[in-house]
Structure formats: structure tokens, C-alpha cells
Image 1 (tube, rainbow, N blue to C red):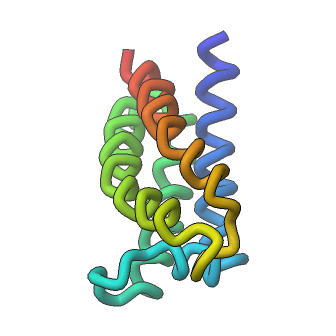
Image 2: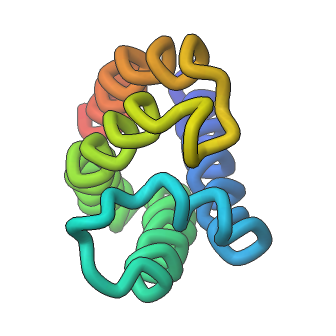
Length: 117
């Protein structure tokens, strides 16, 4: 069961990272205005998600990858809060979906944390 979990988490992050390059406008709208260099941050987070997702599949780097993903999920949480606050305004996401998504970030953190055990 844990191998399936690892596979799903890794693939999910790889696909999310790829989406940063396919649909950058979505991620750019999520970024709080106080952050500098939105495009650079978008692509850097995309590369990081892809790299850490791949690293989950390598036994020697799995724990490092999981810890990196936890740090990334925590670092990106303010963007999720901003998205919820701006949902339906400058961001084309239903507010209810944006707010429901917030607690799921902690579920994602927990799922990734389990990969370190």
C-alpha cells in the first residue's frame, strides 16, 4: 500500500510541476503581490515539484524529497490563502473550492510526511 501511496504522491507532484509550465497564468494569479519575480518563482516551484516528485521514486533520496515537499507545501500555503481571499475576483476559482482546499494542504503534508517513515 505504501508503494502505491509513494507512486501517487510522486506522480501528483510531477504533474503539478509540469502544469506550472503548461498553465503559468493560473499560478501567477495565485501569487500574492508582495512576492517579487512571479514568473521566476512559478517556474522554480514547478521545477522543484518535478525534481522532488522524481526523487520520491529513488530509495536513496526518498526521505530528502519528502522533507523538501513538506517545506514546499508550507512555503506555498500563503499563496493558497491568497487564492482563497481572491477567489471569484482576480482568480477564476469558486470561493468555496478555494476555502475547502486550505485544510487539504495539511492532509497533503501528512501524506508526504508518512513517506519519511
